Length: 266
Image (cartoon, rainbow, N blue to C red; front, side, top):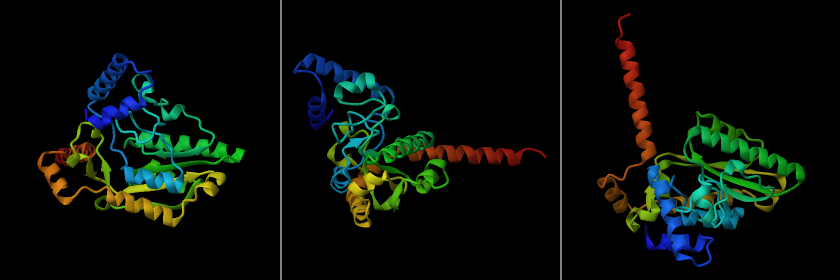
């Protein structure tokens, strides 16, 4: 565990200076995420992107994070039993905010992303009826043929233009940032990314998703690209992208299945 992350966990921890309690909580946390093989869960936005979201769109809460990769003190995570002592609010799907501005970067699982969009739309609809300011900034892979992506772009609550960022034009912070060295913290994106803002009318008035604001978001994502040397060194060490590898395995399996089907006697 990097020293900076250990200090972050200490700052987040709800104990009153009890070192033994804190260390037990950290151990439970690390064992849980390590057992999943997810380390810190999915990749995160860079500090620069979060700063733009904060200053331009009022974001102060993460809908999908963990104590190991959260940027704000207020966030939702998958495991309330290990994460709540570090400030986590539990599952996003149990969260019912009436106002505020939220960042939503779900795990890249199509069903989870679709459920997240549906939940956010229901919350924004309720807030709009109440005249309350509510905003969600979605950051998702640009998988245009899938329901979650189509629903985001077609949402009646979408404000401004959707931002499309090519895979080669932006980066993220590694999901296992708490154990990575400085040269491995940033990683190139494996996919193009779509950024969409869903807001109630009052949310749009308070945090307008202007073209200028979205361009600042684009530039902040670009600034999160690793250097060419760091990217090459990462690839040499075998630091590939788990999601991309999974998709390649699925595509290969599907190709094998088609070949076998064609090879069957008619």
